[in-house]
Length: 148
Image (tube, rainbow, N blue to C red; front, side, top):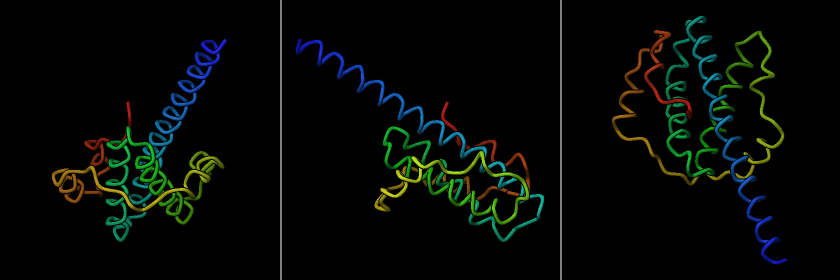
């Protein structure tokens, strides 16, 4: 009986863990679409004043991808990217943003986050992002912004 109970507990634990990993992966990959949308609007509006902030978004998105195995850290960076993308799109986009809106669960998890995180980006990664020509629509294609 105890063995059956333990086995059931392990199955449920594995299922919950894999679901949370899938949710985080989907969250990060959806951010990639939000970043592309911001980039497209930034180019269309010729908004060069936002380039520094956008490069910080790219760094945070890469951080979220590289720290995927450290879920709280990865979620922290992904959450901050999504919030900033939404702020930009709400200000400059005329289309629907429903797809990019944060869900109640994401907002709840975002409320638990701490700023005490460390960077997984190398100096080379930072240099590459800082050197990007954001007026070129293809410029962000060379970055690792999604999880396969």
